[in-house]
Image (tube, rainbow, N blue to C red; front, side, top):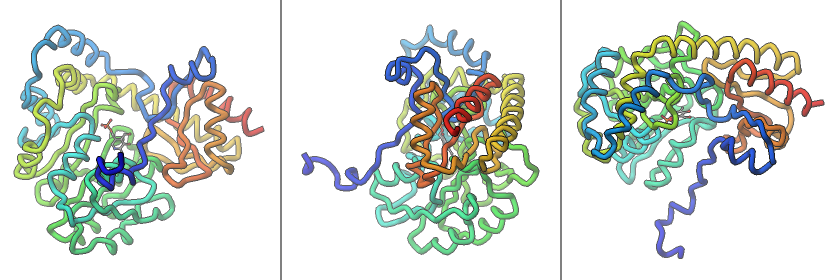
Length: 361
Ligand SMILES: Cc1ncc(COP(=O)(O)O)c(C=O)c1O
């Protein structure tokens, strides 16, 4: 069997996602299970998007528009860029794949951080590209050390800003210095999956910088618009580079329901407002109650919190699972004594704290 497969495929550790609710119910014979494991939207999906998807479902006998003309047009207006600056992906996951395929030669390498979004490493491994992971510093990307790891063969740098799973971010000042130091032949990918939840003033506005620098911004409808199951994300970048990525992507990578749903979601300002409110309120509640439990956590500008449980996080994860609360252990990220919890509804957050309290006793 080994002879049939490319060698580097054996080195890949499969991506382990948040455990599904139904599977957990079946496995432990539970009636009520809550999932706070995949940084999804606690309010569900944007109702406007759901309605548009329902309507669009009558047309799924046809192939989707391979150019996603109307979605790109709307998105371009929303972002104040041109349609030609956009590449759409089947989730931002797919854009990470397309970026690596389009830009990184066999003998070139990629630089990112340890304890960051796992897909950078997994996809790099699929294509046999070398990826250097620089240790975090105080739970943040260590940009100074990353600079030093960039060599003549570095083509791409991935920065998740804010970072998953730490919830930390690099400031506009830190990023500006980093960008100024980047050699001109290096592309910087800033992955902003959680930008809708930020509550700080010094977060960089990348839409100002993508035109004159080799910067690719990634965004997604999965989190703030509640459309994780629809699979739609986008890249904003120089139009010349975007045109090249367009050559690489599959022609029908954005299905017709995703095109309709994402367009409608952009109009759903009320849903975004409610989402932000519930996340920010939930964050305060969780901070307070984690403190009461004597647990340290990493301050987050996202919809999830990295919690130091002071003991094996996998054990805590397993115990919580049996009590019907799905969180995420951090073993894959090398953070042994931590769990990551997604901020849920008030009720979900209360249940999380109640179960955690019981387990820690
Ligand atoms: C930092 C980061 N980037 C990208 C993604 C992928 O998002 P999408 O659902 O758009 O593929 C995630 C999802 O968890 C993420 O945390």
